Length: 622
Image (cartoon, rainbow, N blue to C red; front, side, top):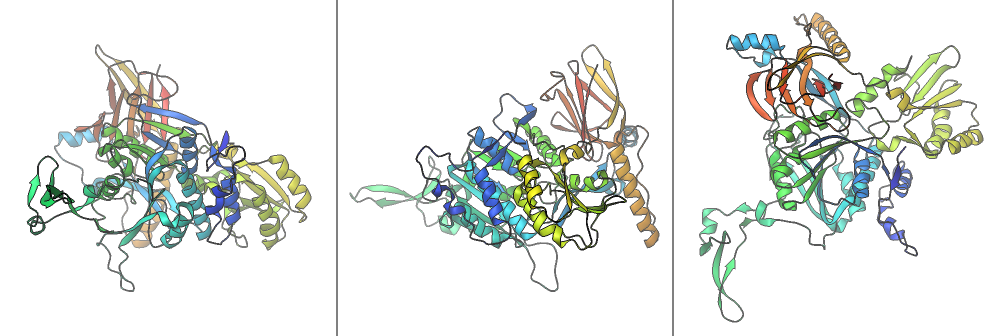
């Protein structure tokens, strides 16, 4: 359960009317579960304990937070942290799944042989399989309710002169514009920006879909919100500058001589260019994010333009759906402070590594919301079907509300409800949900049912829920409530590490002897079986992916902590291994192939290894 709930709005003082706080949030759009979202907002944002995972640098202001937008905003508000600029690129409600390629690294012994022969690996030598990162699959109403509550949370921590840029596409942007009007006020719209990226496919039955929509709202358009015209202006061409008289070296600007009202000769300065248009032609291929592993990562030039235009140095920039970390990286490069938030472990790892390479300083925090998530909510949801004995998914006769069905001799068919971990609104079991189960979902079941099971993450008031069932459940169907956290406790499996610690006169060396990952081994076996079946049908040869006896090709990242055996991680030495086997040593790229070892000057106290899929295992060293 949350420690407490943080109000979205300023807390009122005695005698102060609170209606003004809510007047703009009575929903203009009318669709399913509107009132439920309003009740969430009245209750407040769930505030959980945050665990400090790692500190990079000395007393850093920058934050990397693993958790949901709403809970991150609750933390920021509790800490009285105000954000000057928010850019968010949330899921687009596109109905698509997004995956990352997972590459097997060369085994160190093989890599050394390749280096000795002065040859290089090419793309055909790379062995890879894909893993789902997240599923952008929503019912429209669920998505809009989820987005509305997130926007409300962001508004609560935005500074009085702050701005938000919401980035979507044609799937849902027209609805989101109305939500933005509701939350921020239609009078506070500054621009709708069209990001145009002319490239790629050539459809035969529709016009090429080659733009996204970005809505720029300020907290208060009458305030002194930031807009740096000159930083994003289109420079004058030679013909335009020829009209101006002179160039002022001190002010770095064009001017011409004019007379003031007193008749005195004065310099009249011109802006440094023509105002940038609201249609931006920025190539989608100019991402600067090659090999990052995020298909949805946006171009640095896009974020540069937004951050330069709507913030100044040392201002705080936040991205609550941070993905590949491009917002945080560009903010750091431009001298701004940053907050990167994402629910996916892969996102946290990617941005942590790239910002460490950029010499940034930051804290890595983890929101302790009671869930032992897998690498991201989507993968955890997929894993649940394997953890519930006898669960069958997508059975005929069950509506979308039910996750699956269990059949046993005692109860017959038992529908099972599991909250969608991607949607924060579903994590708390409340009376409205119970009312829906009793009065809507159970009556819709086509075959006779004796029992249903409903899992929950949090429950508002268990005694109140139980009393409601006794008084209102007249169907005769037993409703069993189970804590999902007990089930999720078994989701995360640690890998097995065998190592040697060697002490020399001036340094310690940790040699990784073997690395065993049951989960990855199973995943690779499933991949091989699938590909073999496909190759038999297509009569094409497939070479299965094989793991060596040592398993070292399953390792992506290694770090040693010489300071602490418990608590926040302090990286004393670290190695990141790229897909070709070359290493980045303590943030510096090298042409050195990994040899299975990592060295450090002080005695290492613990070892952390991240496998190629993103699972991390920490082991104390004796």
